[in-house]
Image: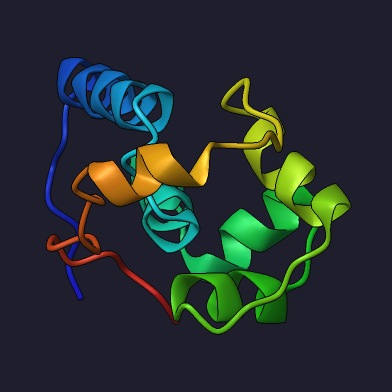
Length: 108
């Protein structure tokens, strides 16, 4: 699959949107990891290696079937200045959760 050109400003805007959605508690783990990888413009294998986790971990999280360790989640989020934290369940139930990424994200 051919990559489309995305300029630095578009990537900065995508990062800002992701941060806002996370701050509001409107993002799933699956969406957040897919979006972080898309912003990084890396394949699943490259992203896993860069973050120090297994390819299996990334694939499972992105498919919504993963049960990653806190250590793995912190490694994934560290590059984006994120770490694991609690979110009130009432907040999540009251808000619309961001759907899965609709853009094509290259994977192996």
